[in-house]
Length: 436
Ligand SMILES: *[C@@H]1O[C@H](CO)[C@@H](O)[C@H](O)[C@H]1NC(C)=O
Ligand SMILES: *[C@@H]1O[C@H](CO)[C@@H](O)[C@H](O)[C@H]1NC(C)=O
Ligand SMILES: *[C@@H]1O[C@H](CO)[C@@H](O)[C@H](O)[C@H]1NC(C)=O
Image 1: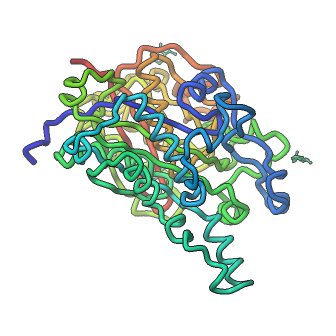
Image 2 (image 1 turned 180 degrees about the vertical axis):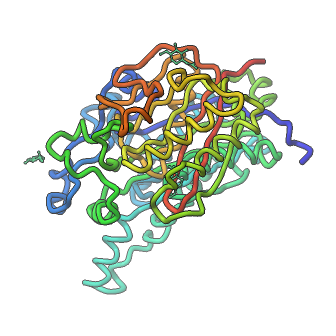
Image 3 (image 1 turned 120 degrees about the vertical axis):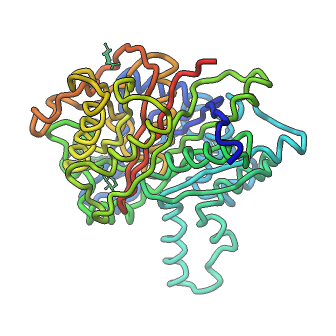
């Protein structure tokens, strides 16, 4: 581990979210308190027969450059046949992040030092479903030769490396809703360990499919009582919260070894200080009530960073708007930040969930939220938790500052971003302002 002291910084950001295509329009709308969740029954008649009929979907483009999704802006001819939608979102986000980082290497050495790590929670359910139906009806000849490459989750990372010629590590995590943070945290470790100097890392998801909604509804995970008021459905920490809203999109960051970034004069958004992983070892889908798993993940991230709990200015919470999950995470945040070397009062703790605005992007959530956390550090602003009228329940447990409905100005020096997933997997990443 002779490279263990290598420091890692964030030098580029890219995102496709239900608020907009692109990091800056997404961030502007997020800070304005806007919401990207809509009624989706017009997309497929099957949605109308399901308990949840809303989702955070990528806005379609009205014209070039308006913040909507137009695959032609990002893809080369034929790419849309080769790439499933989640991989297209990853490609667009990687392209934005690489331009933002101004990293377009051409030398063999630089190409070999650059890797790609993009995960997805579910991958292309559309392809699996449609191909199964076609195969059942028409047999072998109905299966496209592109079926397997569109289906495989690691092909998002594969396509990105092929387009740019990156020959460093090429990897993909698929750890449900923790995927995005695992991808970024693992990629940072690869740089720290010397496997690469630059990593293009994040998560992508696009499974707004009737079968996915049916499955998550059966698991009793989704908000079903808000179909006539989609913008109010995702309400993290609110006492009327009753399940998450599915969303799609991608988030990609460019991570870079500090000296490498300095040597080429890159502008630095933030430093990755710590990364903690843990397991609940408890239940397939339900969290432990005491939030031990998330608490351990955050604690490990801070320990690695060498930062005391009382120095955490902001937590971008995983909080998906479920009754049990938000309560457990709230408990975990308070246990850690009010514990040893922590704050004196919960009112000093700033934690918001941006899922009120975008819904739950599943495998992309942790990546998009890491980007929001980076921008909170950069702009000294806390993004709001939408639809938070009365925190609870019970209100006495929910006594932190959850940044209800309106963004707040706040000096943000250190922040955590949390992601937790089915299977009991929890991760937290610690970021700080970069100080030379
Ligand atoms: C969703 O939109 C459709 C029209 O696009 C409308 O008919 C339907 O009533 C809406 N659903 C709800 C629950 O409001
Ligand atoms: C929490 O946010 C408020 C601004 O809303 C700020 O005054 C306060 O200092 C923040 N707390 C911490 C610990 O940064
Ligand atoms: C930790 O991971 C589990 C996995 O099922 C997840 O359900 C849970 O929400 C996470 N813990 C908490 C308290 O959120």
